[in-house]
Length: 169
Image 1 (tube, rainbow, N blue to C red):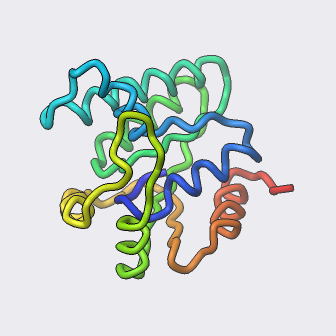
Image 2 (cartoon, one colour):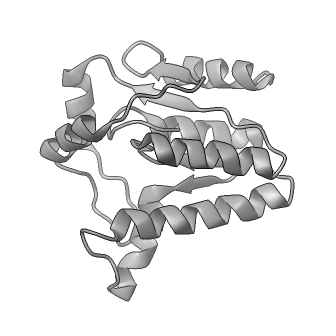
């Protein structure tokens, strides 16, 4: 799941975990886990969390298990690296780009949430969302786009499961 904050990627990732019986590796949870060690700085937070998240996902893939990655994935290079990792370890990468075509809805979500991630921020500022939007690199590889302003969570889950060849229920 990739997309800027407030587009529904964590909601979708968590909803998919049950029918797929797959763990969710979330960038924000990995960042929160690193906070107590005092190692995070503006210049290293994302790379440290990405390395940690990628290693955790690789371990599960090596065991032949599915994984769900929940991260902004705003860099094309990162998405390509995850695709290559899945392929190298015998998996199939299904990229899902989460968007929200209604900025008002997205902003309300971001400003009204409290995610409950130990050690991490309850939410991010709207300025952070705008900054992430400006950093988003086009996704040129095949992937599924889910618009949380149009697709209710259950329908988004069905779209992803259909792409994977699964049926919910």
